[in-house]
Length: 122
Length: 425
Image (cartoon, rainbow over all chains, first blue to last red; front, side, top):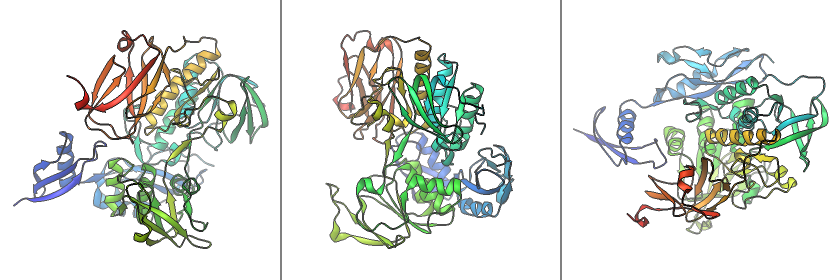
């Protein structure tokens, strides 16, 4: 028994409306794609949607009160809000260098959160 | 951020770059590579990097650094290059004026008011956001109405949340990205309202910033009134007809304490205007040659101060070229004059640079008026290239090679983007 779901392809500004027939997580057919990247996108988005997350974390002793951070890899989409809540609890101390891990294995996903800039002491 | 700390600011530089954002940084590096020995980059903020510092999301550098970086990451990479090239960086400083003799008047927190003589000047001031006043939204004038980019700076750099219930007017990328940022920082976004029948930002941002968080996008809808005393209490929104006139009989109220406007950027060209350089009425930025020189000798311009870009990578590329031109000019190595002017034709809104030469290869940046899928790009009758699609929101870049123009002997080259069917063969 296959079910149909709909996605908007994000690979280019055409924004193809994808119609995906799938049996659970297994994609059976993709329609509406103008190129083959649409099929790949639909498979990923249907079976295991992931997002890169960028946010800020509180930091003391730096010229700015917030440090921008990002996940080193894409995180399962349904964990994004939880991750931001967890990051809100962090209080870092300057200095921090770009690429420093500010939260390892975030929420047990195996994904690290890293600083995306350096902030020295004020 | 390392800064310049001599006791006195040198009074003479080969090249002075006004603005230390992505355009200014690339221009400064380009100036050194173009032959300038002493280069000064002036920025009004406490650190260089410009708007990149507040754009903490990904999407920068795929073309230039061949990897996807965040804004601060891109800025840091570029600043390292600036420092490696031994460029003087003066922050907390504002350029008040540049005169025809290229004397640059600087107001600096460190040095007071000083004049610096420049062999060449690069204007790289970037753009400003259009405000509520620019589109004259009626209503009261409470606090809580601000541009999306200003809210971005508050949230990402100052650590302030501008409101708890936020409405957003305009679906440009900054507006969409701020919708997600505000939700992730704990605010509620009650809706994004877009005058046009389509979203202005990238599909990626519509999906990942709005759909992912169930934020409604109301197309063909605009804000017609702002209510509130000290603080925004609600806004009235209304659908628009085909002529974009609001249908007030179908208006409804949306409760919110904040209204962000994300309704476009305009080149910051006050210096260009006082200098009397010729401006393009469509881009509103300076008219520039193939080396990004304005109509005044030795005054170059690049980045969003010339035309609004959608990718920082192209800003870097264009600005590096402007810097090289300025560096060469300052040391007395001028390239030949341009001999072909580019004329925006069918479905082409803007074309930068405005002139090119048949001697070298050029990258030309176009913006189209309407979407066409698929289409053909034509340069006069000497060259054509098929394109899968064009959309107004995405700049088209074209490499124009000398061999395309071997059989071209005119002075003005028309650039058209037409539907594929209209093309013969």
